[in-house]
Length: 414
Image 1: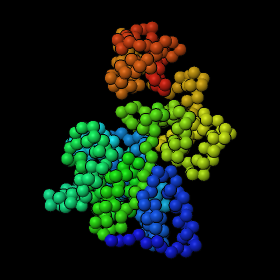
Image 2: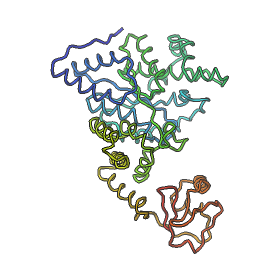
Image 3: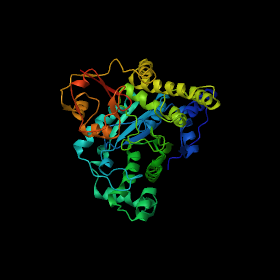
Image 4: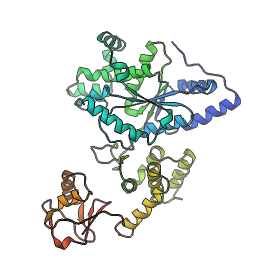
């Protein structure tokens, strides 16, 4: 087996090692095994050979939120230090669905759905990683021609006892919930990925530890230097109590408009700011520590610290200066009680249903969402009462008024 050897470094190389270690270890939940990573990093610096940093995505949807990007922000740090990012598109595992944390099996996707989602995913991931230092690999590149003999061989390299020790599998069995045989192959396939791409480090959320360590096992069986698992926290959603998730509507999406991003950051509870500064912002470590220290000792006001965070997030995705513009707009709307100058306008049909007008004006994505917002008492006329009936009809008396949907959507009626 290829062993991880601790290289002897020059004084300058030792300083470079310490610099990289300080950057790469910041904000990490767990490095397993940490001594191996340090040896691996030292060897990389001595030989001038970049590490291969793996992170996989299953294109089961088309929207990426800031929680998804946490490991990719760490990948970008590796890339900025001269290492190579390897993104695995799980076009095979997507058909299984990652069972981690799931109470039930997930339906399979078609090949066309997977390809379409993958394209959209990568467009969003490229907002963070360095395109020129990223390899994108599809599992079809090595799994397409795999035969039954190879699959049985991979299965022989692990045990049922080990697979069933996976927290999710153990929970399902204990509760008497269905556990399909194909789901047991998910960690096997993820482990084999690491063999094919020759990964040195695999990034993942803290819930991915079992799957990532499978990669170490499969590499060891082939005499390769086993990869190191570098695990990052699962980010809390804007609600402040549950993980960021589309299904819980507590997420900040990459595709959100700048004003929505700013407003969503401003909506987070104060106690989430240390977490968001570490994992969502693009500030340097020293600045993060200074800001959080000021927040803790009371020398910095929480609201100002949150605005600084919101500006940083908007600037990162929409260009420098856009954060300041969104702050000005936000303060005009929420502090001064105004309506944004760039709020959309609509010459509406008199006698039309409110939900139809909201959809036509582009302030909701669907009639279903329009109904949900009305029923949640989140639609009203600015400076007037809420509109709480999904059967509401708007007549001539609404001309010249402004509809407010939620906290940040406005529609001027003409």
